[in-house]
Structures are given as C-alpha cells and as structure tokens.
Image 1 (cartoon, rainbow, N blue to C red):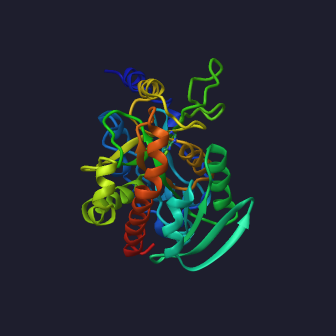
Image 2 (image 1 turned 120 degrees about the vertical axis):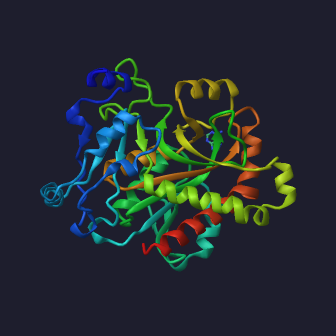
Image 3 (image 1 turned 90 degrees about the vertical axis):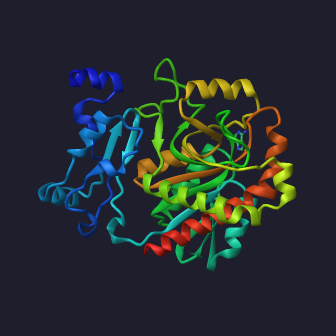
Length: 349
Ligand code: ADE
C-alpha cells in the first residue's frame, strides 16, 4: 500500500503537519534527552505504520539546540488528536499542581489535608495554596460547566503559576460497559455540545481544526496507577458495606478513554446512546473537562482528568448523583489524589 493510501485510511494529516511545533514553552537543556524516541510515549492503539513513522523522530544535537533556542515544545499529530510530548520539568521549574473539582464535597478532604495553606479570593473563587503530601499544590472549586472550568484553569496558570492541572470529580457513564463506582481517566476530551455544522464538522472547535484535546500521557499513567492502587488497597476500608450495597459497587474497574463535556446534565438513555454512537471510545460524560483540556492545550500545560462514575446518564441520574457524590465519590477523590501526590513526591517532583 502506498503511503498516501495509508494516510487516507488512517486520516493522517499532511506530512508538514505531522510534526507540529508550536508551543511557547521552553524546555531546559538538561531535561531534553539527546535522542527522543517517541514510540515509547504513544498509546498502543496507534497503528503500526504511524508508530514506525514516530520512531524516526529522534532529536539530533542540532535539533535539540534549535528547540531550546526557539523555546518550543513538541507536539505530534495523530488523526485529530495532538499528542504532547512531556519534556519533564519545564524551565527546570518545580512542579506546581493545580487541582480543580466542581463541587465542595469532592475537594473538602484535600483542603483539610493541605499543609501551610494560604487562601486567595479572586473572581468569585477561593484558591488555596499549600503542600499536599510534599507536592506544591493549588486547590480550587471551579463550580459547574465549561465556562467555569475554563476560567478556573486559565487563572490557575496565569495568576497562580501552576505547571500541571488535574481535574477530579464525578461523571455519568458514557458506555454500557461502564458501571457506577468505576473510575475513568481521559485519553482525550471533546466538547459534545460544540456543533458549528455545516460550517465546521460536528464537535470541532471552530478555527482550531480540533475536536479532541489530549490528556497528558504521563499524568494519565500516574493516575491510572493511583486509581488501581486505591481500588486494590483502600476501597474496601474506605467505602463501607452499606454504601457498597446501596450503590451496587461490586468490583469497580478503571478505564481509560474519551471523556465528553457539555453544559448539560445528561439524563436520557436515548441521548447518551446516540452520543456514544457518535463518539467512538466514549467512556464518560461530564461538564468541565474538555474546556479545561482546551485551555491547557492552548497554554502548553499538561492536564489530566479523572472521574468517578456516579450515574448512568439515564433517567435515574439526578437521584444517584447527589447521594453518590457525598457518600462515595469524595472518598475516591481524596485517596486517589493522595496516592498520586505520594507517587510524584517519590519521583522527586
Ligand atoms: N456528572 C455526573 N453525572 C453527570 C451526567 N449524567 N451528566 C453530566 N455531568 C455529570
């Protein structure tokens, strides 16, 4: 098969777009490896042809200097997903983690655990800065919806200097295989209520050429490990038998996939089934993640979204949601973030 046939088959972008370098962030020399073999950083789902293409993208010393001088970061483009390559500690700056939740219950435990906490009110939100298990962190409640998520993420970066953003919260199941009590980590995020068709394809953010915004690969892997650790070691102690029975939480699982966000609480099985058919790989629906991911993508900040499934996005969604958040999800968020921060601290972040 010819390369252009393959490109058509996999919808590869034109060659000059395959390596797309367009960030304004600087990677310090010490943190750039001499040879950057990206094949290790790519999800296994990427077709073999493309992995082969990626394997050839190694940095020779000249290219490395060029990257440093132009203060640019590296993005790879695959289908309509940009893959951001992590160059570890940007500018040699120590990590400052922004943690956003939509609801008070989801963040209360973290606020209580924070050491040396100081608070700043700005734009109707309270930003709490301090240490979480050794990690420099800023916690904030975004409130609900895409605009709320976007403005919170922007301020975390521009005013509070965070280097990474983590969104924790709850979501409705985006697929019949996903159950209440499962945990989902975003590979990519899409705004399901974005539709400027016929001017632009459904879901595409006009004039960006993108519908799917990436979750940071390294953060996602660390969160997956934290989520598995939580289910294996903490879950039975933290969620009591009564709650497990009430919410039919038998053997919760961890999933990775596409999260769709929109300014709607989804509560109709027909709507969620249609969305699932329109968005392959959909695992969850919520109301902020994709907006945060777009802001982070545009500002060159790694971000991750982790959600506990609170309901099936059907007619029972509202009842399940309210009780689940306070009784169960708050525990999930606390223990997973604790494991995540402890893991980061062990690796010297
Ligand atoms: N967050 C939790 N459940 C949700 C749902 N069903 N729709 C949108 N956001 C949610």
